[in-house]
Image 1 (cartoon, rainbow, N blue to C red):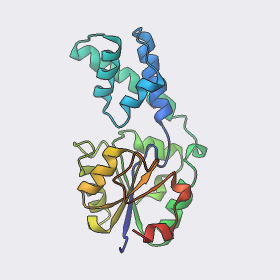
Image 2 (image 1 turned 60 degrees about the vertical axis):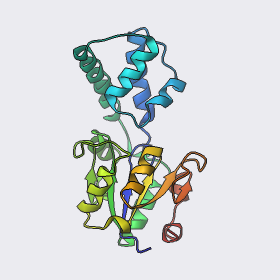
Image 3 (image 1 turned 90 degrees about the vertical axis):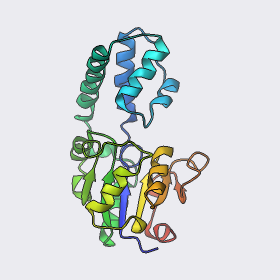
Length: 215
């Protein structure tokens, strides 16, 4: 295939902010007297902020009003934002910066396709903003993955047809979103989990142009 654009999910592909989400949800759960573990945290991956809060409240069998939930979610986000504001360039996942450099030098467009509303801060703190021709994140989309909206908008932003795009994703919902958008997808993680991806690698440090061109 003639690849004209690479679209990247952010969390788990380029950086790993999952630890900060866990720490801030854990702090909230502790304050509410709920025992929230790393195992429980698996249920929150790729899930919206309000749904994540509902899961934690369900675990603790705690009921809150809609207004109380809004306040709790906002507090969690304040703590999370405080942590990501201290992120450093060395927190970029192995091989991510090098691979972005490689595809750009090959004349391939790059776009970010992330549900995170904080992606701008994360890219700025890790020194990655200039690697992307377009940034489509939670501030630009209304539908969550597996809906393909974020990737279709990414393709449009770099003036590329979906069929000429390759998406890099670490979540099942993200892989499904890319396929639903008519794009090829490279899964970052385990082949046993990302079964629908066209190719699976453990990280961007295992990617190169040859592997990209086999798609």
